[in-house]
Image (tube, rainbow, N blue to C red):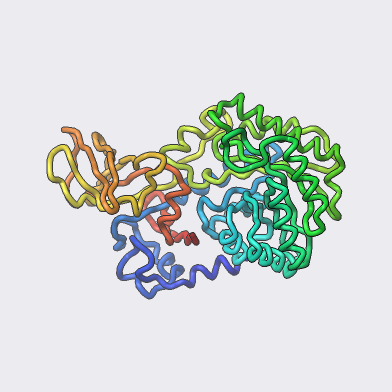
Length: 424
C-alpha cells in the first residue's frame, strides 16, 4: 500500500464538509489540526461528534493479527466496513494479506491508495468496471484481484468484456450459496461445478478457488454453519480433483469465508482442509472487528464463545448534547439517524459529562431516533440537564462509519491525536 498516498490525506483542508470539528479549525490541514492535539471536550469540538478510541483500535488490530496467525489463516478484512485508507494501512501493517471489498467504487478507493491485493466478495459483470480492472492489472504487475462468480451467464459476461479489454486473466472463485433462500451464490455443488468449468474454459479468467459467506446460513447455529463450511471445503477438493485449477501461474488455491460472527468455526473447519494439488490460501474476511461495537457484534462475536482467545473492545463513542429536558422522564439529544446507526439496535447511553466531571449514564435509555434528535427515557435517579454531553455506544460499524467523513481518533485522556478519513 502507498504510505505516501495515505500521508497526503493529512494535507486535506478542514471546512464545512466535516461535522463535529472545531469551528475555528477551518482552513487548517488535517495534519495541522492533529498536531495541535486538542482535547475533545475543551478544544472547540461541537456535538454531535463521533470518536474512535485509539487505544481500543490498537488492541483490536493486534488481537485479530495474533488470532489469524495462531490459526494459520490469511486475512483480508472487509474494507466496506470502514472505507478508511488509513485503517486499511493499519490492517495491512498488522499482517493482513489484502483488503476485501464489495463494489467497484470501493476497489477504486483502495487502488487510489495503493492496495495491492483486493478480494471482491461479489460477482463483477459491469463491462466498464471490468475494463477498468483489466487496465489496473496491466498497469501494475504486482496487483492481484480476485472476484466471485456464481453463474455461467456471469462468467460469459465477464469473459466477453475482458477479452475486449485484453491483459492478464482475472482470478475468479466460485461462490457457494449458504443455503436455499440465502443471498448470492450457486445453490448446488452441480451448479458450482458448471460455473467452475465455465471459468476454466474462459481465456480471460483463471479459476482460483472457492468462497462464500457463512453469515447467510439460514437460521444459523454452530452446527449449521459448520456443515456449510464442510461443504465449501469439500467443494474445493472436488474441483481440484476434477483438474480445474490448472491456470497458468496459479500458485495457491483460495478457500475463503468469514464474517464477524463465526470466524472460530471457520478456523476450525479450515484447519481440516484436505491436501490439495497446490497450497491453500485459507482466507478469512471479517471486517467489523476493527471498531467492534456496543450492540450487535458485542453479542455475536466468537470471542464470547472462546474467551480464552481474547476479547475485542468497542472503539466507537458518539457524543451528543442534551438540548431539551421537557419533563422528568424525557430528554432529547442533538444526534439522530443522520449521525448514529439504528438498523441493528438503538445507541446505548453510557456516560454523562458535565464540565470536567464524567459519570455513568444511570437510568438513561435511548428509545427512539428522529433525523437529528435522540429520544431519551430517564428514570427518577437520572441527573441530566440541558447542556450535558452524553456519550453513547453504537451498534453495527458498517452503518456507523458511512455517516462520518472525518472521525477524531481519541486517546483515553480525551486528546485527539489524529483523524480517520472515510470514502463512501
